Image 1 (cartoon, rainbow, N blue to C red):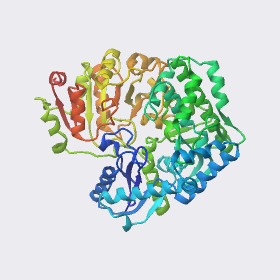
Image 2 (image 1 turned 90 degrees about the horizontal axis):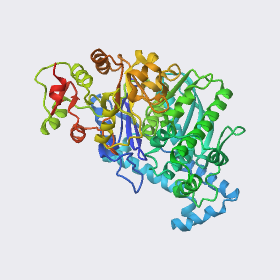
Image 3 (image 1 turned 120 degrees about the vertical axis):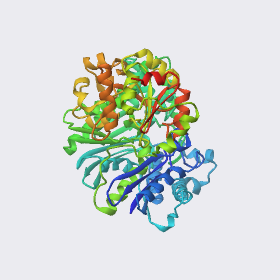
Image 4 (image 1 turned 60 degrees about the horizontal axis):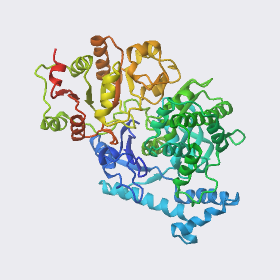
Length: 592
């Protein structure tokens, strides 16, 4: 028996948890198949997540399990109707009567406008079940369970190796909330408070991203990186604090950014209102200073939120999820708060984690226990040599004449200054490439890395991340104690030591931090062997690890995707499973 998790929204995807073992067997986003970044299957957007669901059904068949429940990351329509219409009428009662004009703009009569949350949610649930049917399973043969968006984010607690924690979720919006706070105990999540869409910190940061000329739900990481190049702007800080603050009495953030908006009940959103408001606020201010000031406000409000609830609950462990926690600088601040023993950032912290969160909730409900904690994130499609190697051979890659273990050949090429790629095992769950679908490069030569950005078509503003053995972390980074788990998954920034600045200088950001991945030899022995061999060949502890994909594409999934991307980026050495393949100067680079 197994639980199938499904989500058909932004970052649509599917997951599978074995009821027999409690292990997460599969988790993959639809974008990996469609090649559409942040694949969104909501009505009017991209197609349904049929291929990701089919992959999970195939995995169930391979492991000899049948699906006995479908878990969907969507709130029950009647409950969403009650919440969303209540939030809307409360805003109107506060004087926001202009919002009623939105019905005419949407072409809806009174009944259609009033019941917009119910009708859209019902349609989404129907479409999610249609996706299951299209993937090859009749959804009528098993029950399905519905779970609201932020509860699915909070279910990250069930997948973390802790028995109790303060759980905090923050994003743009989902099921008419932008965040929530919970206490996790065993298999239970006890709600503490919720944060309405009206007070969304995700929308605040997204509006600043757009106002700085970047793209929403795509370039927030660039805004965070740009922050290190700027300074605090006192005038803008005062204006933003007037808009966004922490309400200690209510125990949640509050925002005035939506005052005056003409917007209907959830899921209606008029993003242009916030974007234009932010554009006026930052007019004439250096964009790096804007980024720095916006980042400061975000960190200030979120740390106040977390500190408030740590104090109220007495917890010392924090589990966080939701798109706001893709911000590694923010996560570093949380891990350094007094009294915090451990911070756990869910590796699929964006909506890529909703399908798995729903599955984890259904598993805990039906089995009375938690799923096994996440360790190896290679939970997507994997390919054997017969499938993986031919697409590379078809475009001119060849096996070296000398047969050696791939980690020795890659280490030799890296020590000689070459860039290499790895296409090994299953595609990673979540937004980070963690060695399965990675491009690796020496971390001491900034010229090589600037060239790599050009070859991959990426912005020079984004810092590269280092990959190192866990045992090396204390020599290279501070803040290691509370942040050890997010360092495993490349989901936090940490302060670099002088040793790191000497050995991996190109992976150190302008503000003296890095976003490392720590490799545990127990979980990924092959990758650990590569890092060890590279140190023996070069004397340096660590490499740069960036995702194996071209600019604006998702991380590669299939062998054909990988071969195309490697050729386009002129990567001449690629590990494909247990094979090393080379082209051009790559043959000489790997030779003894």
